[in-house]
Image (cartoon, rainbow, N blue to C red; front, side):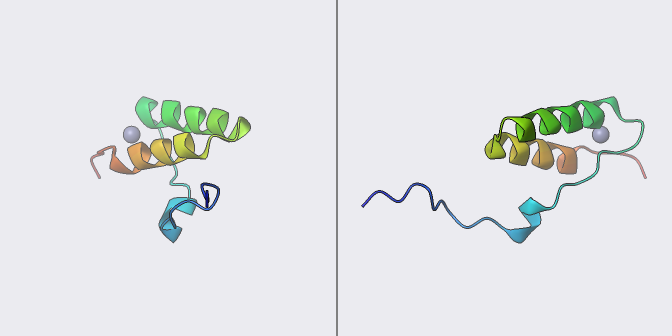
Length: 60
Ligand SMILES: [Zn+2]
């Protein structure tokens, strides 16, 4: 049977949206893309943006 709707279980962590770093253009752009992805219901794009925001290095 085709069961594509029930895709792989995602880590709970992926459902939490990381905040973009304040003052970081890259993070802000990603956050904007994420909003746009939400607007069209593109969950995989949302995850992509979240991953990139999380991975973006910043000095602490
Ligand atoms: Zn950043």
